[in-house]
Length: 424
Image 1 (tube, helix red, strand yellow):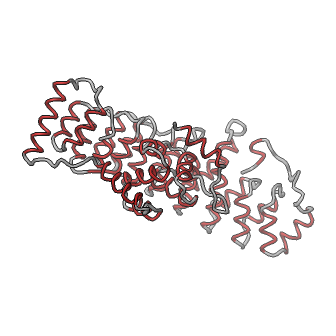
Image 2: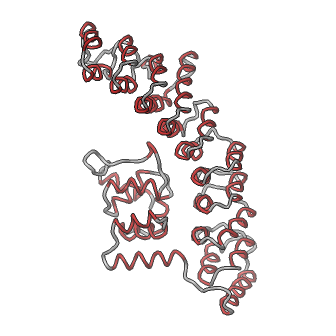
C-alpha cells in the first residue's frame, strides 16, 4: 500500500540499494526478468517504474510489485485484475495486512480507492485470494460492514468462517439470517465459537441440531444458552456421545435439562452432572433423590447401561498407552484425524504432566502462544504444534504461531513456561 497514504512518503530515502534513476530506467527497459523483479521489490522505487512493472510480461516481476508497500494505488488496481492467481494472492496479503492502518479521514479519495481494490479481491474468483482477505480483516472495525457481510456469505467455509467467528461488525440479525440460510457445518461451528454469543444466536445454532456446532456452542463459556436451547441440545445428546461428553462438564444446566438427560444415562453420568450442577436453582435434595432413584431403577431393569463416563474411557486408554510407552505423536495424529478430542486432551495432559482440565482450558483459550507452550511442554515437535492449533484449538490464518525456519519453537523456553504459568 502507499506509504504516503499514512503520511510516511520517503521517496526511497534510506534505501542504499536503490539504483540511480538512469540505472533504474536501463533495468526497466532492457534488464532481464531477475533484475526487473529485484528492482520492482525495492523500497521507495519511483512510481513510474512500478506502473510499468505492473504490466510486465514476467509474473515474478508483477508479484514483486504486488508485494511492494510503495506501489501506487493505481498500479495495485491493475494488479487486482491480473490473470495470475499468485499475483492477486500477493496483492491480497499486502493490502489486507495494511488495512488496520487505514485512516479514511486523511483522504476520502484514497480510502475509496483502497476499498475498491479490497472489494475486488474479496470477490476474486480464486478462493485463496478471498481467504487471505477474510483472515486479515476478521477483527477489524474500521472497514465497511458491506465487505464483512460479503465475506460472511461466501459459499466457501474457509472464506466465511474467519469473519463469522471474529468480526465485530456482524449483527445478531445478520448471524441468525446466515444460520437459517442453510450454511454448512464448518461455518455454523465458527458462529458457535463467537465470543459473547447472545441467546438468540445460540438458539439458532442449537435449532440446527448439528453435532459439531452444538459441541462448539457447549464449549463456548462466553455464550448465553437458554433453558429451551439446553432442552434441544439434551435431545441431541441422547444419540450423540460427542455432545453428551461436553454436556457432562457444564455447570449451568437447568433442572429440566438434567431430568431429560437422566432419562437415558446411567449412574456414573448422572452423578457427574449432579455434582457439577449442585448449585442449580431448584435442584434440592428431594429432586436429586428422585433423579437418582429413577436412573437406578432404569439401570436395574436393564433399560440403561451403567457405562463409565465417556471421559474416563478416553483417559484410561491414554493412560494405558502412556504406561506402555506407546503414547506417541502418531497416536495423537490418529485421534485428531478421527475427531477423538477427549483422548487427545488426556494424551496431551499425560505428555505435558498437566491436569486434563488445564489442557482443555489451554486449548479453548484462543491463544496460539498458550497452545504452543502446551505442545512444547509435551515435548512435541514444533511443526506438530501447528496441527494442534488448527485442529484442537481451532486457531486459523495469521493467528497461528509457526516454527522458525529451522523448525524450532519461535519463543524462548522462559516465555513458553510463562504462558503455561499464566493459566495457573
